[in-house]
Amino acid sequence: MNVLIDTIDPDDLGELADFHDAGHGTADDFLADMLNGLRQAQKEISCKYFYDKRGSALFDEICDLEEYYPTRTELSILATRAPEIASLAGPAAHLVEFGSGSSSKVRLLLNAMEAPSSYVAVDISRDHLIASTRDLASEYLDIDVVPVCADYTREFELPTGLQGKNVTGFFPGSTIGNFAPEQAATFLGRWAKVLGSGAGLVIGVDLKKPRALLEAAYNDARGVTAEFNENLLVRANTELNADFDLSAFAHDARWNEAAGRIEMHLVSQRDQTVNIADQAFNFQADETIHTENSHKYGLAEFTDMAGRAGWDAPATWTDPNNLFSVHFLRAR
Ligand SMILES: C[S@@+](CC[C@H](N)C(=O)[O-])C[C@H]1O[C@@H](n2cnc3c(N)ncnc32)[C@H](O)[C@@H]1O
Image (cartoon, rainbow, N blue to C red; front, side):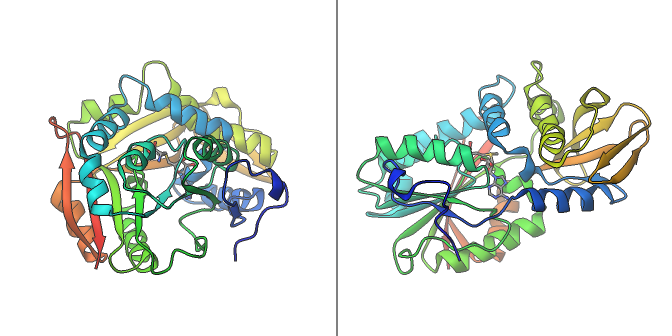
């Protein structure tokens, strides 16, 4: 059940129609996931913990990097195809974005759609979500803007009133690539059921391409991606009272050909012990914490998976260089 949080004055939502907080991504969740992840043979931490206020700001910086082709490429596809997307979504649609970040790409859709009714923005990064949706709501006064702070890998309720309505989901940024393919299929299957038969889903999917282009995109020369990756350790030190020595871990991003994914790791620079909540974790030199996967797909590989998860793919678009794809899916 969603609750209206009490740290925001309900009279002070600005132009926001409402605010929902599923209570996910708490310090308790972070601690439990961190301890469990560091106990694995291959140490790991979920990439969802990149995103506090600083992590979200760093992600926006990544989007502007020369090496990071996905954002500008997806934006160019959305800008070109916005009229077709608007026509497929239909009039008075309710738009639900998963991992809404700065809510910048959605403006292209809202501007093209015929009298959209509402925009529901789902994100785990609470402060950034509130700031971004407040900005958007002040610009789009005719649209109900509802931020939902939730972890979309867990169960949560969408605001009431969407049942039986014309709903289109929006999942840009190739964020679906953070899931392993079987998790991606589960995510797509769940939302086909929740959004309902006939619902649309506009989804951005990064495509397979030569290793050099991929690895450059995640190992930028200015080191912004490295700072983003290391923000996990900064958060653990600040929020969990851990004692990670930031200078003793290095960012690394590598293409795993067999798995079809870019993997991000934090590499221990020496033998060392890290303490978190009275528990000690030993690292050998060169041992890594696996922090993110970014799976890349072929076009048919993705639409076949979406098909098995209950979605037809009436439209698929790419850029002229076949770097990135945007699909309009329709729930059966
Ligand atoms: C790769 S960014 C994409 C942001 C934006 N949609 C775009 O395309 O530029 C992923 C976004 O999803 C959010 N996010 C990541 N994992 C999440 C989760 N498990 N639940 C909810 N939001 C999540 C992050 O806070 C971030 O805003």
